Length: 236
Image (cartoon, rainbow, N blue to C red):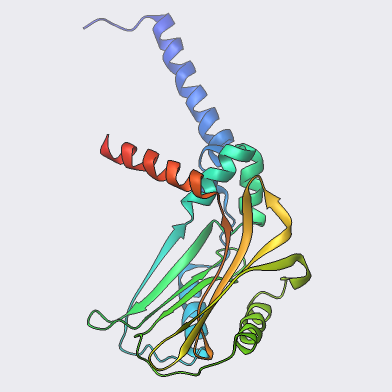
């Protein structure tokens, strides 16, 4: 075996030093999730989620539960490609809910389940889903009454939301067998990143909130291209 020469040894040490430099000083840029200031622990996120579901009027005693750290990959990649890593990281830390704790309560044999996502830094609600049977009985509210419930929910759970900055871009109703469901969506009319919009969506099931999400809506053509690239990458 050839013995390493002095020059080869120096080259190896230099490579190691460069790798350490990149790891220490550029890690947050290459892996922005590592720079998140996670103040909410896994157990705290579960407690927040359970408390929210309980206040929603549901009893998940006997349900199976799961909690994972999740992300909105479409939004993260869009921000990085649009703004560059440094600026994107700043926005993802402070403005856009890209990372979150995701809690799920379910029973394998039934459709009804609950899902809650909370911000790992503030503990604020990022999204909520209540999946129920289509035939579950509920109220048949007029559209304006359902909007009031939706807006009250948003203000209660996101006090920083100023509706004067938002405009409603979607309203729809669907008559079920035993209730009427409504869907609403708002966008921030004063803030946009490239073609991406800050959105709030909410569904009302009868007279109860069935789902809520605060998110960055990226252009559909970007999402399609990203999905194609991801599929090719997984295949390779």
